[in-house]
Length: 291
Image (cartoon, rainbow, N blue to C red):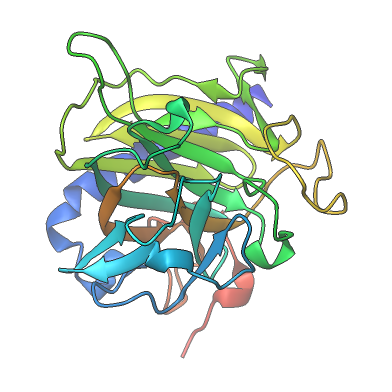
């Protein structure tokens, strides 16, 4: 296992460097970037909010305005009532480099849990929302948690790892904590933050904030708690998470997302094929074509 992780660390470094070098060409088809958010609407996305059936975007929680995905609660009647929600992209991925640009702003919705203050995130390796009962609170997934500073001078890093219904190996062992803090700086106010995650199947995950690596861990897998009223058939503790869905979080705090894109790192690695790319790190021979 040690040699495998060492090799993956090298791959992450190469992926990160190639991404930064290609940043000026991110809109070029040759760069390999796929825009998950088209800047116009939520086509290709599905909402799942606790207390509601999959596909019910209750209260227009997730909306597109001014080319931005906005998460808002102005149409909620009464308190928040644990209406935790997630907006899922409709295609699962396994090996990829994810980029999300977000800003946390506004006031926490009245009656919300205190821990949701200036708190949101993006989920990955998530279960399919169609497998979630109406009253399930969180998807079984791994979260890259987004936090903003609350008290001046008090550290509150972003880009942390949280684990609803999952566990990860950190510093050589399964870490019992629900959330593992990153080494990022604290970001105050409503400034835009660029968050990246290099996700290599069930092996290595690396978090990057504003170009700086802030956290890495391995072997994401189903296990642990902090998820309720799930279908027991889905929560198979100990099962490594090789792939899953990506979801933007709604957790009582207003947040904007202006960029959601990824570079798929799984594909044809045969240099003789027409669709060979140097940045692939996971071979998928079935995707190769030669004419």
